Length: 149
Length: 106
Image 1 (cartoon, one colour):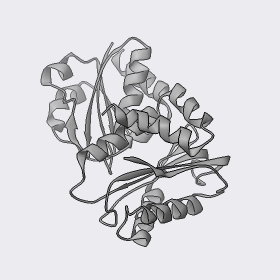
Image 2 (cartoon, rainbow over the protein chains, first blue to last red):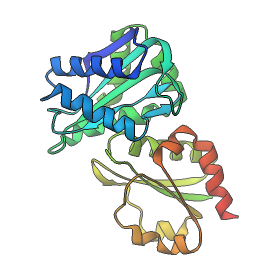
Image 3 (cartoon, chains in turn orange, purple):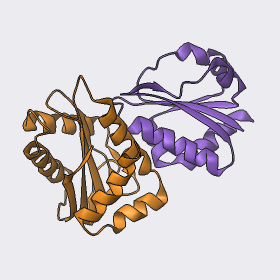
Image 4 (cartoon, one colour):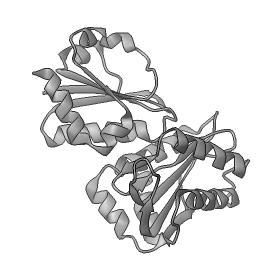
């Protein structure tokens, strides 16, 4: 589920590693992780496999590992877009970091994450999302998707 | 035009469902009939029947892993009516992928 505690607007990150480190630390603080370092390693392995930039200025790094306690999706938006990786060369300004436990995943949580992911394909939703200037606005928008579940 | 598809990614949380949305959205925009089965973390959703597959003009397999029930598509495969690609491709560029799929019909 999207949590207000895991939304960060207008941040100053300039590279993939820094933003993943930051979100992992925040997810750990919010009690979502068993093992922060292991989670980061899993997410970076996945990135090394194939970039999670999806185009549209959005990346969705994710890790499925037993280092995750509870499925979560975190959202970070940066003031200035930066190059996500040197293969796609995509410039990214919105990052959704997803953590999923290896086993016994709550289906409702997965559904919530998949619904947010689907919305990102929608032009007008992305515009609305990029217009959010505060954590409160972004939470309201993202949470409105999950309310319909 | 009737298009069916299957989407599946390794983690089964985001790409599977985004690829579904990308295919559906582009097909609907063009007025095509569309149904996309997802095989992800929540199991199989929107499962395609034999009949739906038979009736389809073309099949899009946006899959990064092996899927369940692959044998349902043998006939379409023999007829050269399957477009297989990575889910990330159709998310990034739905119009180009649907164009390519349609080109298999003619």
